[in-house]
Length: 101
Length: 170
Length: 138
Image (tube, rainbow over all chains, first blue to last red):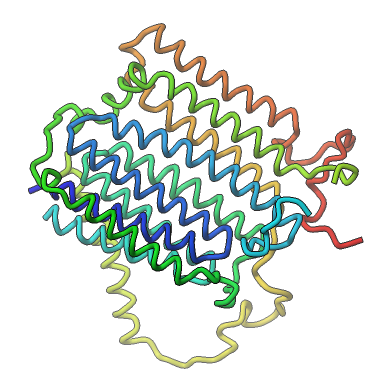
C-alpha cells in the first residue's frame, strides 16, 4: 500500500514553512542560507511526489536541474558571504543593511 | 510497512528541520540540515526516485554541506551566539506569516484527487536512470546545456569573488 | 526494486541499534569517576595553547568550490553515460558541448591561479590570497 501523494505534499508544505520561518527570524546569514536549502528540498520533494502521482519522469528531471542550480547558488552565495565578512567582519544580516559604505 | 517508514522519515525530517532553525550554534544547524537531507533522500527512495536519492546524498550531504561547514570554520562562527543576536526583531511577524503560509498550503494540498491511486509507470520504476537519461537527451536538451553555462558562471563568479581586490580599487 | 532497499534500511537500523545498545550496556558496567584532568586534551605532558577552533586557510575553500562544480558536472553526466550508446554521435556531441563549456571555466580558474597550492613568487596581479582574511585597520 503506497503512501498517498497528499501526505508527501503536506510534508513538503511543512518543511517549506519551517524554511520560511527560519529565513524570517534568523539573523545569521549562513543559517538563512541553510534554510533556503531546506525550502529547495521541500520543493524537490513535491516535484518527485508529483512525478510518481502522474507517472511521468519530468518531475525527476526538474529536481535534477534544481540540484544543479542549488549547487551553483551555494557556491556563489557563500563566496558573497565571505566577501561581506571581509568588509564588515560580521554575517549578521541586520548589520549588513547598506549596499555601499 | 511503507507507511511506517514514511512516517519515521517524515518525523526525522521535520524534527531536524525545526532544530536547524532553533539551534544557536551554526555547526549544529548544519548537522541537523544533514539529517533532514538524509531523511528526504529516504523519501525519494520511497517515491521510486532511486537515482535522485543517490544524487541528493552525493551533492547535498556530500558537497554542499561540506562547503557550509568550511565557511563556518573559515569565518570562525563555530560558537554559540546570544539569543538577541540570533533571532531578529521580526520573530512575531515571521511566526504569524509561517502559520498563514502553512494553512494556505495545507488547504491547497487537501484536495480530493491527490488522495487517489497513483499512476503506474513501470519504466520509471525499473529503469530509473535510463528514463532520466533519455529525457535529458530529447525534451530537456536545452536546459541540460544551459545547466553547464550556469555552472560556468558560478565557477567564474566564485573565482572573482574570493580573490581579493587590490587595495587601490577599494 | 523497493524491496531491495529494505536491505539498506535493515543495515541502517541494525547498525544504529548496535551502537546505542553497546553504549547503553557499557554505561551499566563502567566505573564513574569524573575528573577535570580526564577532559583535558593531553592528560600528561603538553599544555595545549589556544582553542581548537582555528581559522583555516581560504585556499581550502577555493578547492572545495572547484570540487562542487565538477561534482555536479559528473552527476549530470551520469544519466548521459547510461544511455549514450543508444544515441551514437549525437549523444557524443551533446556531452562534448557540455564538457567544453565547463572546461572554459576550468581554464579560467587555472589561469587565475586558484588551482595552485603554492603561490608563484612573481605576483603580477597583486593577488592577496595569502594575506589574512581580515586585515587590521591601518
